[in-house]
Amino acid sequence: MAASTNNTLRVLFTLMVVCAAVCTAKRTVAKAGDLAPAPAPLGAGGATAAPEGAARASRTFDISKFGATSDGKTDSTQAVQDTWTSACGAMGDATMLIPKGDYLVGPLYFSGPCMGDITIQLDGILLGSNDLAKYTASWIQVSHVNNIVINGSGTLDGQGTAVYTKSKTDVVKAMPNTLVLFYVTNGTVSGIKLLNSKFFHINIDTSKDITVKDVNITAPADVENTDGVHVGGSSNVRITNSTIGTGDDCVSIGPGSDGVMVNNITCGPGQGISVGCLGRYKDEKDVSDVTVRDCVLRNTTNGVRIKSYEDAESVLTASHLTFENIRMEEVANPIIIDQYFCPQKVCPGKRSNSSHVSIKNVTFRNISGTSSTPEAVSLLCSETQPCSGVSLIDVNVEYAGKNNKTMAVCSNAKGTAKGSLQALDCLV
Image 1 (cartoon, rainbow, N blue to C red):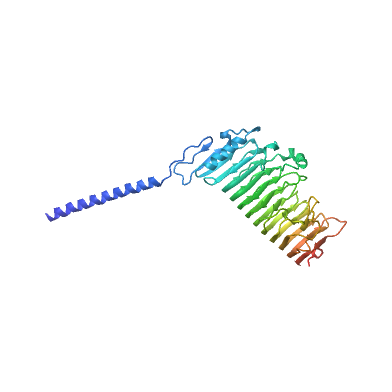
Image 2 (image 1 turned 45 degrees about the horizontal axis):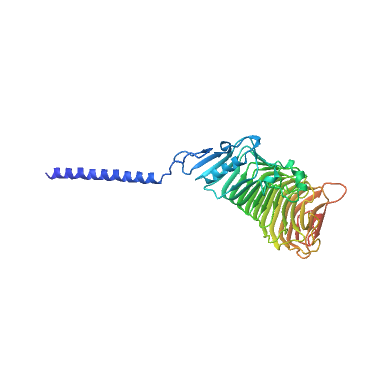
């Protein structure tokens, strides 16, 4: 009897354990189902949903599915704009695809914030409209966007060659930049080509954590204001592994820039790599922590340069600037500090020694090659704001001609020289 009772209790206990396990499993499955993301629906137009169960939804928006025409003649501005609007507004990560083909577009405003990280995959060619009346500012402006990548094998062709003559006579209307990053955080521009911008090719303005890499930028050598990459009011910017040849600065670093690295750039033709212009406008901010290294400059009209207006409107400082491991090949004016910059020759304070821009802690290190002008070094600093802490270390650039000798010209430049060509040591 006791044995029978024990067997009965064991059976009941086993059934209770099994029931508890089954109920627990059902509750676990129910919770997992509650947390699992719902499958992303198919989007409008060219949106393609991610596979069901993906950890983070990712969708592709193809401009051709939104009505863009790849004949290079039909205006596809609205189709591209609509594609951006859908991609930016999509939940999760999104890719805006510009497939192979030629697409004519006017001004585009890629504004955020977006619902997720976004990629612009540029495989085709965007052609900038030459109807200048359409533009109020830039051609393609990316603004207030976090976590954006612009990459691909395609081209942004500003088609500037058709309007360059107009820009020289049109003093009222400024020409549009090709690509502007404005209030962008964590952005990358990679692999694309930029061609014949009407103004700057890339303008990085009031942004941070920006990388420009593996790009190719080309414009005619005789057209000014076609800077390759311009940086202003931005921090933690890296420009690397690129080939740039334009009619102006390959890279220019303007006021308010901090933590800028420029390396592995092949520059030429153009006006070299510059910090400045500084002091042109009121309330400009300081420039600091700029490094230019491992670059080659070929047949440029300047080499590495710091330039500020002689009648500067702002009081600011440019400091901790380093130019190192740079090869000059037939470069005019390889090393320059110019505090008397006055491109229009109408500066009211010309040679007044009234500069409000202070330049200090500048290093030129391991710079070699040839100069196409006898003056390989030109350090022209203000009498009231002398340049201080200037170092010329292992600077050996020689004049390539035969009708003169290599020389340096300095005024109000204080610092030291070491291991450099004796003719280039003009610091006090």
